[in-house]
Image (tube, rainbow, N blue to C red; front, top):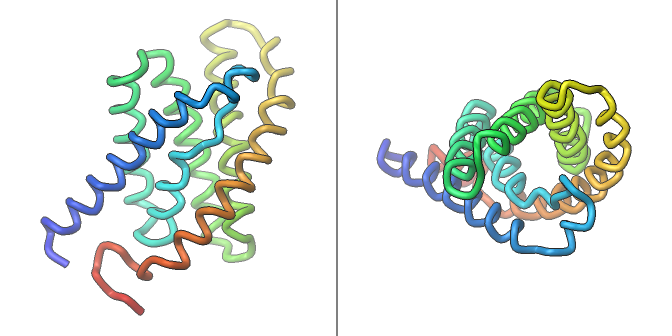
Length: 170
């Protein structure tokens, strides 16, 4: 695969993540629980993690967070998303590298730690630990969303080539 083709694959994944982020923001059912999201953009991160590599997954996620923050959000939303995205990405990479857990478990833990990262930022921004109680609510929704995204991700990943960036189809 040429360098141009690799850049195109990355750009398509970033664009897809941005579209999924926008679509998710339009789903009103999630507004009942503040901070709750299905995590559709995590589909892209999971695909990058399992079919490209860890470094590319992190880069794609960071670029997506910055672009979505600049396009649809503000500096606070970007800080919350970045903290959640980096912490969840780190945990997902560690779990994947063990080879002992399913893709769904990786997704669930990513969802949970995304919420942990966001709550940690909230404790700093709001200068109070009282927001920590909200972790239980977000963990419940994170587990459900993580299972859904994990199951969908595994179906997508199983249908894609082993390595999207080198063109191999084994």
